[in-house]
Amino acid sequence: MSSKITILFVLGGLGVGGKERQLIELISGLPRERYVCHLLVKSHDAYYVEKVKRTLQSFCSLDREKFHVFDFLTLAKHIDKVKPDIVCSWTNITSHFALLARICTRHPYKIINCCIRNAPMRLSVVLRLERLLYSLYSCVVANSNAGLIAYGQRGKKGRHILYNGLDLSRMPICSQREARKTLGLEMKNIVVVMVASCTRLKDHETLLRAFAECCNNTGSVYYQLLIVGDGDRRTFLETMTHELGISPYVTFMGRRDDVEMILRASDISVLSSTSWFGEGISNSIIESLACGTPVIASESPGTKEVIDDGKNGYLFPSGDYLQLAEKIMTLGRSNKIKRDFIKCGKVTIVEKFSIASMVTSFEQIVETCDRL
Image: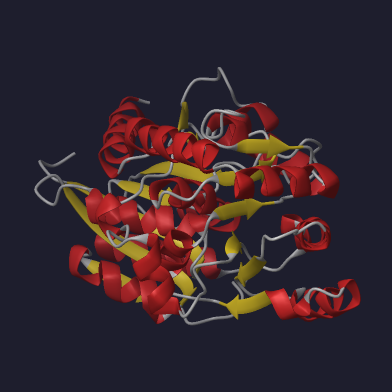
């Protein structure tokens, strides 16, 4: 390789999810004196592109809703153009395209497959096939140890963990009171928030049932629930709030670009993902900890690598809305527990999920990839 390492990052839609956030933070954090970064995507939202363009040598979007079967040829042409030392792929389909592109280009390159983002308890037929296909790659990266285990990759040569990294300078430095004033939220309310796409995987239904229990046992306590995110289940969830009689206390905020401010304004952050999906490392959780917002999350395998139950947050069995409600009410009533969780949560972020740690880990992966 030359004195500078050229990396072509490839993925599908550049939206506002956790995978995209990690990629953008990684590209922004890599030292420019050592790396030349290019990015190719199927489609994109403007939000992240504007944040990362200044750090890229080139940006290419195919502006398509779906990949075409012969887009590996498009990737091959782009590889011939930018001549990367490494193609770093963040989706399964683009990883397979990167393999096929080798047939059509004379330019040599290594592939880093960064596709393992979850840790399902049981693998579907499709995921079993993906597990088999990982054997085609000399370098496979997961964002959690649980992900490597779930796909049978832990302990194999060329398998790595790359924890999500947070740019702590993005976290609001204002007080909770100031954040609530900015967002127009009442100080007297206990504000519960969930930041996640409105899909079956995230199981908002469990949260809504738990929230209804909290509202039915309020006493002198007033609760407010913020749902941040959008998706195909939003209309169903809005209907469910009416059926449960909690619609006056629930706000569907849709997609937002001020998530950190919303987290800072909140008392409790919940992630109620299903057990069958199996979270890897959720950006929602680590961003909540970084913002000083205590977390209650379902017992997904990757989540246990972030949340130490009873020390920096609470865990509950997936789908158990009664336990979730109990933990929300416990946190709502105890300022001491909240302070302890906030203190330990910030230590967790600094020690495991900083940008510096992520960049260092990725550079080590690149060095290992070069030797394979």
